Length: 240
Ligand code: IPE
Ligand code: IPE
Ligand code: MG
Image 1 (cartoon, rainbow, N blue to C red):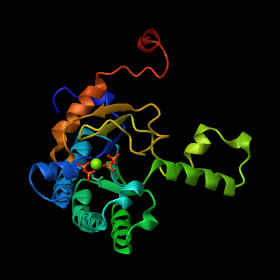
Image 2: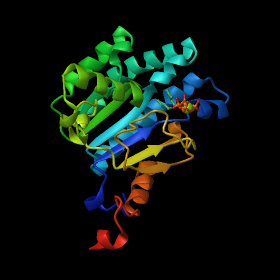
Image 3: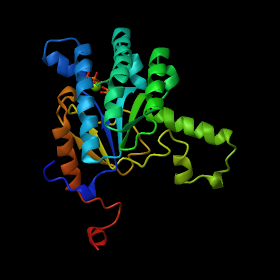
């Protein structure tokens, strides 16, 4: 953890875990093999984040758009999700980490929903860090849902402001991420947390997700700490 300033840590880090398929391809293996290796990178990153002192870690694991992948890959991903949640609950308990999920969870296979519910219930009193899995998630889905709920609640236009709107998102009790990481050398957001990343620092790395690790996470945090977050103000105002 050399060089990390503990007084200037992001409270919330969000990660777009990308590149499993390409990682497998370079090894001459099937895409599924990349996803399996990706689970290990998740474990390392989650443990690393908790050790560093991050309070919220959101991982983009499966997008709404990912349902359009070949059925075989979707099934493999869902099976992997079930077995990983089951196996990793121990790691979460050991590390005092609470699990939570955002997205259209009702679309997941029943087995996955059950395992998820179990793990969330089991870890609900853990307090060191909250791990949020984005599953069957897309930001436009989330924002449209918020709008629908606002209308159903009969809210008047004058009652809506940023704080109120925020309360209708699935991240309602979570601060916006200060840092968003995307692996695999792609420079896009792919429908992830569009509202919440309005002022996030973006960090892109060519590393493919299965090769991501605690060291890579530390690199991203160091980079974050070298930035000046101005929020529209001038440098002089910030340094006062
Ligand atoms: C990320 O890796 C995992 C998911 C999106 C589920 P990919 O499967 O997107 O891997 P690439 O981008 O094709 O290499
Ligand atoms: C984004 O990765 C979604 C997840 C990491 C779960 P994709 O691989 O699906 O994104 P695109 O298709 O390259 O934008
Ligand atoms: Mg991808």
